[in-house]
Length: 118
Image 1 (cartoon, helix red, strand yellow):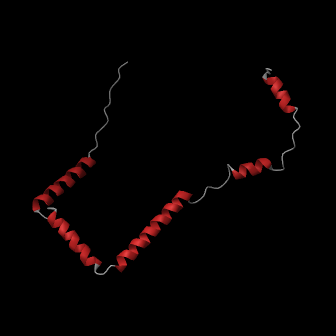
Image 2 (spheres, one colour):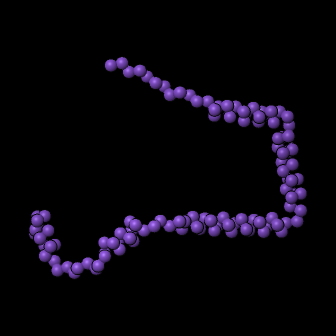
Image 3 (cartoon, one colour):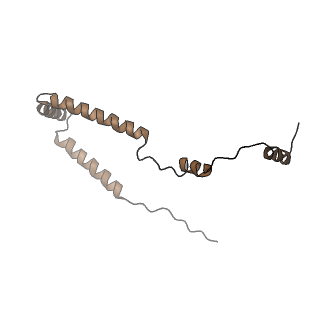
């Protein structure tokens, strides 16, 4: 059976529907559109809790290790010496590279402009 839009509208209007509860529109708007945004999303809360737990765990490990500062400083010194970072040539080229990167970042190249003649 084929109905046109007017017949469907009349059939829907003829249905025995109950009256909506009082303030239904206001309650729907308050629960959806006007609802205040949460200050912190759930994934942010989980991430903050995870980082806090890892930080507490690392602090506990570091504080319970005897002579940690001496061992870490020795390891860093060994890495610098064995990696060749203590030589004058390496430090010179590192400085040149950092300087070149900084100067290149300071350049401003104007955009190409073309003149259109009508």
